[in-house]
Image (tube, helix red, strand yellow):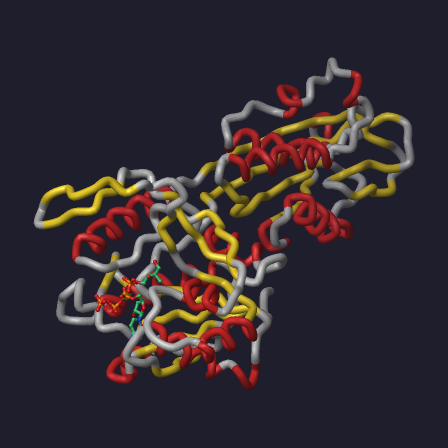
Amino acid sequence: MHHNIAALIVAAGRGTRAGGDLPKQWRELAGRSVLEHTLDAFRRAGIKRIILVIHPDDREKANRLVAPDVTLVNGGDTRVTSVRAALESLVTDAPQHVLIHDGARPLVSASVINDVRDALRHAEGAAPALPVVDALWRGTDGHVAAAVPRAGLFRAQTPQGFGFSFILQAHRAYEGEAADDVEIARAAGMEIVMTPGCEDNIKLTYQADFDRAERLITHRQERDMDIRLGNGYDVHRFGPGDGCWLCGIKVPHNRALQGHSDADVGMHALTDAIYGALAEGDIGRHFPPSDPQWKGADSRIFLRHAVELMRERGFRLNNCDVTLVCEHPKIGPHARAMQAELAEIMGCEVHRVSVKATTSERLGFTGREEGIAAIATACLGRNAGDT
Ligand SMILES: Nc1ccn([C@@H]2O[C@H](COP(=O)(O)OP(=O)(O)OP(=O)(O)O)[C@@H](O)[C@H]2O)c(=O)n1
Ligand SMILES: C[C@](O)(CO)[C@H](O)COP(=O)(O)O
């Protein structure tokens, strides 16, 4: 997907402030190591190349994380030298961009990563930040010594993204310590754009941060279990014509389906199933048949609207299943094209979309070929990786 970008995940520190038996990035968080959470966050964002920077003492543990998308590199004594080691390791097969991230920030969301990556289309560098909202003081000996103006102050997060060759040169030219790579990039004259940070993208620094991260992960897991099901049912009668619109495909037939719109009975049932899963009524509520503007309308408009609503509410389509009930036309030869068309409209993978058909054994209105009925089920899940 994004082969020309690599994530450098720095994890060579010793985590002295967090304490514990193991360096913090190797400790368990909600059943998995911190680094496993961090690697998965980048995979969810579609990153295919990850350089994991480790301490040589952790090689044995780290070998378990090696995968086709993960390469190990030994870090240095400071964060700066660890990043530098990772950058140098990429020189022979350089990506266009790099995202440099603390292994100790396992809760980074796909949207934080993607906002940085998107900003790199126009910027030399980009990094997530949050404005300081609390009042700031300077303190001495446990007393407030002065108020510090907070206007224009931001809290820096990672991943910090850069053009690879720019940041490599900046690191090579830099001497001494730096809190992060933005500092190094700015010292080399690079312009850095700020992108939205996220309160959940915490860096595990002290023990209390582990407790907070556990709570956030539990909350995410509960949210991810929020699965919504909806069903839809629709019928259209036959009238004169030379084919029927069914699931976005014009199927040749000696008749056509009649309706206010293009009468795509399958797409209507599916649209209603999505509205149903969101408890948002049905097509008639969003596109009233009394409104002349929907006369003869392309039913894709309805389905796209339901999908937009689904995304706005933070859901994605897990899968859907449409059954067309008719004697004729025969659906089998067109089912795959219908699945592909529906998947295209909904912006999802085709394996999430099923279209099938049955006859009603010549019974009832479908059996007498007076019309076609369709039933659909849609299953929605929460958008993974987003907070
Ligand atoms: N020599 C170092 C030092 C730090 N880091 C990484 O940089 C990130 C941010 O650093 P920090 O939170 O300061 O981690 P530690 O140095 O491990 O923590 P501490 O200062 O408490 O020892 C961490 O993912 C850490 O593993 C690194 O790769 N190499
Ligand atoms: C890079 C960083 O995460 C930006 O907030 C941070 O500076 C690194 O951690 P440290 O605690 O400053 O070492």
